[in-house]
Image (cartoon, rainbow, N blue to C red):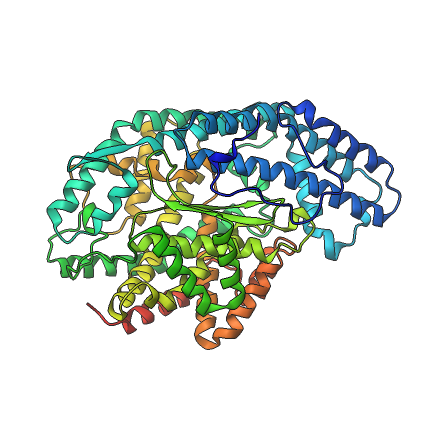
Length: 582
């Protein structure tokens, strides 16, 4: 079936390079429309007798991958922009359920044939090392019996998205999404904060059994996927599947421990300072976002158009190349930024792989977090734009651990120009909020990651055991917050973290990357131009180099132990002390 163009915010986008292998028009009705392309690729690989021909074959294969990738992205974008649109849902599920399973099998056949080709090992290592090791892993892990399980996994993920996107509450006579209610947590009036927090929390709790049911099914599926591939648990399978060549699960445990020793003392200091400023005996969950000096919430923009214009002004100051990239996205309507009913929660950047253009999705409601989000997703977009000239499809994306360096660095670099949104005093408030947010997010990342380590290394656990494991982590990383009367909500706080449902083990990357971004930011204090130049040079490498090298080109050390975290926390502490207090 064809995706209706009306469901997409952007129009027709031309391929970055003219097609040489894939026909100009493709019908996406059944896999029979696509199989001849795979058959032709397989046959042509059998005729390859020299390295130049093999390298040309890789480009043809990449062209087909990009066409398929972009079609999937377009349908995902339409579905998340319109979770309440039956046509968008039908189109997305058609791709996931009717097309993708067969396409995965065909891709495996090509990868298997490539690995066994007599010239595969002769591909120049300097150029093809990363591609070759990824293909080898895909071949080693592929099991045809896992395809229907992965299809069901994607369907359950869509159910989670649909459930989360449908939740609303009635507040002051108006229906509001849960995202729209977030802003009330910044209100100085404590009674209002408590009322709105409780309203939203009760609404989430009404659906807790549905969330648990979805997750139980996901755990079962993932356990089967790992077992079919010969792994004792899904964690070990996930690490291999994510091509984590440069660090191990033991390194993640070291990160958890380093956050506990190096970050948690600072978190507790911030909580204590907040409690004193608010003149409260204890902090409650609805006391964590309000300005502790009682100032009204930061109001960075009046509408989405205002936000976009001010963001453009920040990039105009930062760098002409970045400014041009964001301007191009505006012109091509590659932005869907407003919050509305029926729109999936959260924010993301998706690359349209054949056009080699980024698309940004978010739910702006007029709070400071929106400013951080647009800067963050723009960093991802700049990463995609930096690799447009790379013709190897596999190298136009980097490992997530470095993709997030691109986005988190842009938050920190962009924050230097927040006067585009605020007065000088409010800009400092926003910078303080952002730095404190970094301190607070690191324990949350450790919590989510450690929780997943526990979940997938304890197969057959009960829901009660899962609650106990979660609460142990909340005790370890939750700071000084009193949840009296809301213990059940605390026990299921992870329901709102979509990564646990949709992208298992994709969250530690944010912690690793945050350490890289802080190093980019630290370098900018020494030499702003050199730091920005190194940042952009590293983005242009895409996925062509190992993680330690990508970090090194950006001027960072690829290490997430206490020896790296300690000096960065000292830097943040100094920067917070230098900001005028309110």
